[in-house]
Image 1 (cartoon, rainbow, N blue to C red):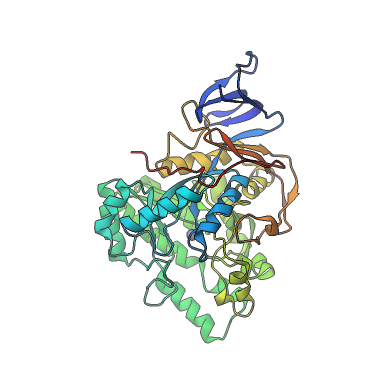
Image 2: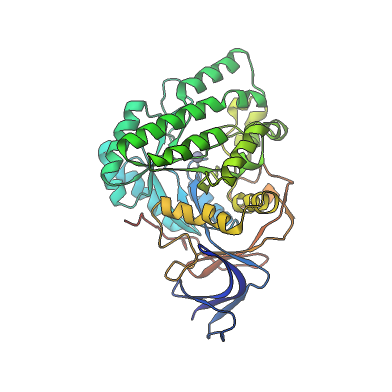
Length: 459
Ligand SMILES: [Zn+2]
């Protein structure tokens, strides 16, 4: 045996048990009754008092798209993923150039293979012109295809060289029909383009540059309308479909109701569940994201959806902007980078709120952070659960910890957090990727960049 994790409280798909976990050649080989004698192992990890969770799978990260130093960001920032209990990331296609062609996709794969501490999967992008390229990227292991229904540009073009243009309804229908042919997954940023452009222009005409104007420029109805349209086209085409970063409880309900006719899942993010519009005004540019943080009653409706089991999974939507890219928003909120740095806090902050304050079980949290993403994105049964035969991707948690978030200590360039100075009641003590410890709190861990390996969609 290579490694034995003894004395922990294991969170399995079937529920919690006290057991010892045996690892060999990077895989889980046995779950052992604690009354049995321990087998010999080269490494024994004492997990008494700790919760043994399946490593989280974060299906929504932007390490390569937030600024111009993707290599350095990946080298440092994916260590941050490990610190946050995340053992696999799924990187979005945004980058220079975006992963909308097989060449660009393979370039990106090579970059992450050299730099990522944790395992990685890759999204490809839809730009309305590359329908004929999709099957080849699927063949190369793309786990999903990203589409935008909106753009900051009124004409719908990409707003920079890393971004994607909006897909119009015809483009969306054609993309879903094509993706259906190889049973791929389309993931959609679902906000109504015309409503967002109209609301944004109204703010600009009024000369608004303040922080609240950002919230007013992203009304909830834009999201509610768009998810209904997405669900309709998903049902019509039969394509597997995933809605990213849902911030509205009403939108989540519409998607959940559509599951009887469409193959559709959704994710939400910690910031939509913990922060609200008043926090946005208090925090400033560091809390600017799209969709914007919502008013408190909307946040509570989103929690109702979580508690009803209607939110399939959690994702960080990690956008590690340089501090100056965010600070630009103090003069005019429209100049602040759009997105939050959240890879290190995503699961601990969600767990803190969900488990301690909302009564969500650890089994449900494991489902939302690991099992559901693995199943929806084609990484199951290799990733996403603690079970014999799975990769030994594990995070050990102290769920009775208390620590204060300090973005200044984050790995990577984004040394800031919208959760700064908030207290978190769950802490990652150790993270293991394919049997190897890549993070141990308070200890120097020998891990070279590039430990992470590419995980393609399992068919
Ligand atoms: Zn995103």
